[in-house]
Length: 83
Image (tube, rainbow, N blue to C red; front, top):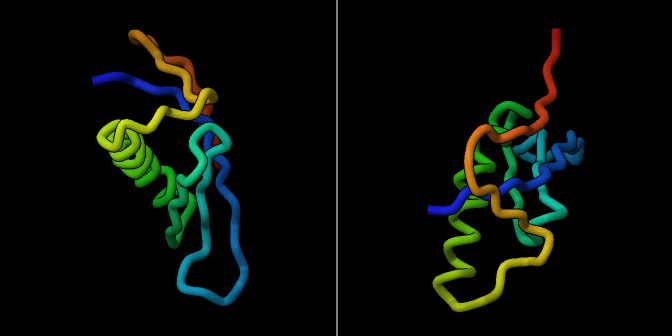
């Protein structure tokens, strides 16, 4: 199992639909996670990204060049917090 470092973009959507937040990734085209809260899309994004990567690999498709494999911990990342 490999560990990948992906940038996520979370935005609020106000289109009157069922979901209020959307996460995408400039590193992994096709990643799209919708949810009721920003916390929900951030919690769901890793498993959705993992499934998308696994699907690409199973089909023999190359991973996007923007995906960076991380070889070991510690992993340095960023999170947004409210206080």
